[in-house]
Image (cartoon, rainbow, N blue to C red; front, side, top):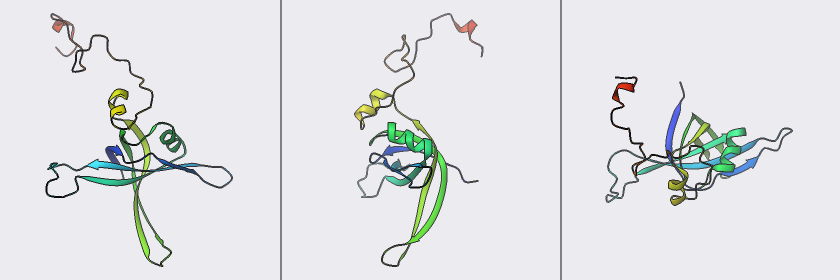
Length: 149
């Protein structure tokens, strides 16, 4: 099974191009910075994130072009694809990319605007009785009505 799930921030705006055949197809390329688990102080000079190349095709590429921006935190699912080519110097270059099958936003519109200009529409309305931590207050005496009691 070849299945990948990643969550990270875009290092730049997606690069979009269209194939030059009879049926033009959108292709989006971007890099996702994914934090490593463990020590995060960075004092030892070690890299604390992996920078993973991602490629999306067709509708997923069009979605990336329309909604994804540098600094946004997203989650993707897809598969690993390896390949190789010979560069201009005659050297063989090996590649590893994630072929994106699905994107999901990981921050609200307001949070993302501080981290790089999240501009996608937020489809979920904020609860009217939410407290500062984002959770709704449950009224006293409702315990009898809850299905798991």
